[in-house]
Length: 378
Image (cartoon, rainbow, N blue to C red):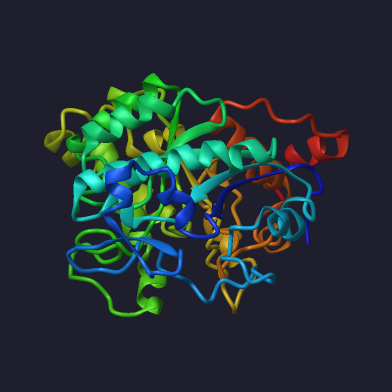
C-alpha cells in the first residue's frame, strides 16, 4: 500500500455542541422562549409549536467515537486524540452536523438559529485550535437572508466556505434562486460546501421517482444529489457568472463522476441549445470548479484496484479529490483506508494540495521523497 506521511487536510469533520443549550444561549430572548425545555435545565432546539419533525439535532447512536459519554463530535480532546494528533493533521474544515435549521418550517426561526450557530462556532471551536477552519451556516431556504448572513460573518479569517447542508427549497443548487448565495460567497472570498442531509425537500436521495425508506437506500443513492447539483450549476451558468467560485461536493461518493462527465459532454450541443450559459464542455467546468470529498469511497469487494482503475479513466481525476473522514460518523474513512484506494502519485494532491487549491492556502512544503511521489502516476 502506498504511504503518505506528510501533513493532512481533512475537508469534512463534523463538530457539535455538547448540548443544544449551548446554541440556545446565543438566541435572542424571544427565541429562547420559543424553544422547549424539559423542566430540568435541559433545552433542545425544538420549537414549542412546530409543524412535524423532531428536534434540531437527531441523535445518532451509531457514531462510534464518543468514549466519554459526550455527544459524538462535541469533544475537542477526543477529536485531537483520535484523529488530529494521531494522523498528523495540518488543517481541517469543520462541518456543522446540524441541518434542520435550514429547513425549519418557521423561516424566521431558521434565520436566528443559523446566526446563533455561527456565533457559537466562532466563539468556541475556531478559537480552540489553529488547525480549525469552518463554514458559514446559512438559512438557504431564504437565499437573500443567507447572503446577509454570509456578509455578516464571512470576513472571519477561519471561515473559508458556505455550507449548503440541506436543500430547503427542493431545487438543485444551480437554480437561479440560489445565486444570491454565490454572489455573497464570491464577494467574501468563500467557497461552497454541498453536504447531504435527511432533511432535504422533497427528499435527499431520489430525485426522479420519490424517496427511499431506509438508511441503506439513502446511503446507496446519495450520489444522485451530487449529480443533480453539479449538472444544475453548469446548466444555470453558476461558473460563468461567478468564475472564481469553487464547490466541494462532500459525502456524496465519487464513482459516479466519470459517467456524469461523459454523459454531459456527449450532450453538450443540446445543453447549449437549452442554456445560454454553457460555453465550454461540462467536464471543463468540473475540472476548474468542482472537488469531491473522498468519503464515502466505494470500494469493490471483488477488485481492490477497481476504484483506481475507474477513476484513472478520467484524465486529471487526481486533481478533483479531497480527503475526508466524516468524523465521528460510523462510516468514517481513516487515512490508511483512503491511502490504499489511490495511485501513489495521487496521494499528496488528495491528502493536501487539492484542498489548499480550493481554500487558497499555501500548502506546507513536501520533503523530496513526497515531491517525487507526487510526480508519479502509479
